[in-house]
Image (cartoon, rainbow, N blue to C red; front, top):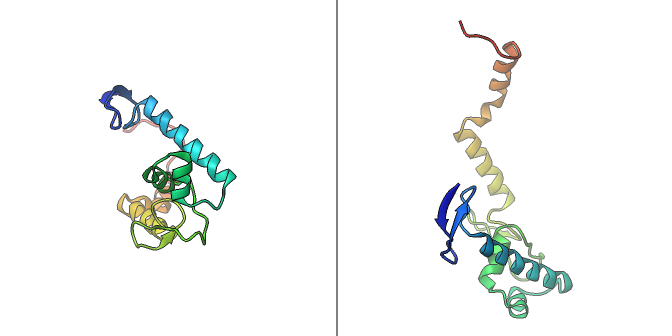
Length: 134
């Protein structure tokens, strides 16, 4: 547990799991998200500017919810997000499925996780349980 300043309001708080915002600011964000979600539920064809105007939630915050994968744009709405890696149009998140899969493969390769079959073979050759090394 680390004591740090909230990046939004500046108040001190004890951070767990490297959180950047205090509990009050996180709850405020969640309240804004619920407001946007309810408006979209009642008005499924609403545009981002319309949602922002009606809920008084800034467009930047709505875009953040989209990038976090909390909201999804209806295809054919005239607005799409761009994949941050290749620029392909996407409806939610930061990356398209193709880029996400490629990055996952690259990360696994970089950390040696793609050799899981080798590790399985080594584990199967050992006796189960604990032993004393001589």
